[in-house]
Length: 64
Image (cartoon, rainbow, N blue to C red; front, side, top):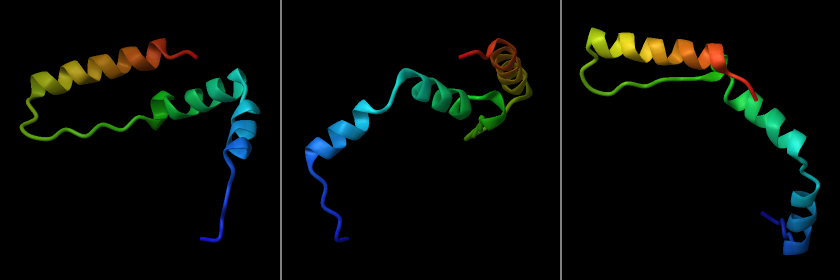
């Protein structure tokens, strides 16, 4: 690819990341509207109700 990086460059870049940048990224990645769910196999209505309940609680309690 014609790209050569030295480990010192990677370390310097990593040191520039602060806790607020990590929190901001986590807020975006784990925001309730960004969740996706895939169910494989039989999907009984009782399981769906339980998952809906868990997701609603997650959305209500979501904070970072």
